[in-house]
Image (tube, rainbow, N blue to C red; front, side, top):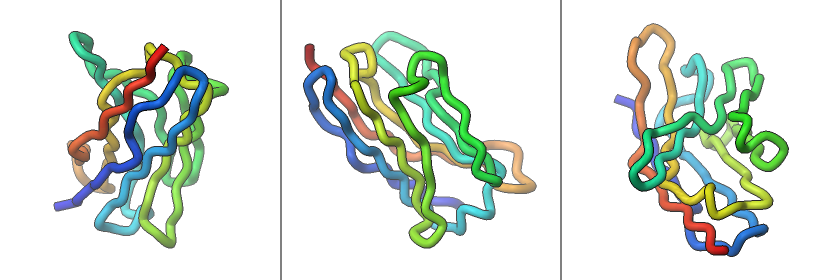
Length: 117
């Protein structure tokens, strides 16, 4: 059972920045990919960014050029650097990983990001 713990959420003004962290209980090299989703009130969960086991990132169009996904293998931690935040980025952000050989991803508990206008 993989454990994921997010941190770094909070309240920030539009144009500001936050860095989310996702600490995982296993080596990141155990995962086919890692990523972040978000869910705003009344909306479906949407994919924000992913990073493959070889380090290739992928972003939703809505965050390209503003968000950066990265990982630190020494710390077994994934990050989401969010710059130029907009009110529409307000959501609960969830990290997730897919373990090699398994069918379903593991999810963290979520961290709230609120961007005020």
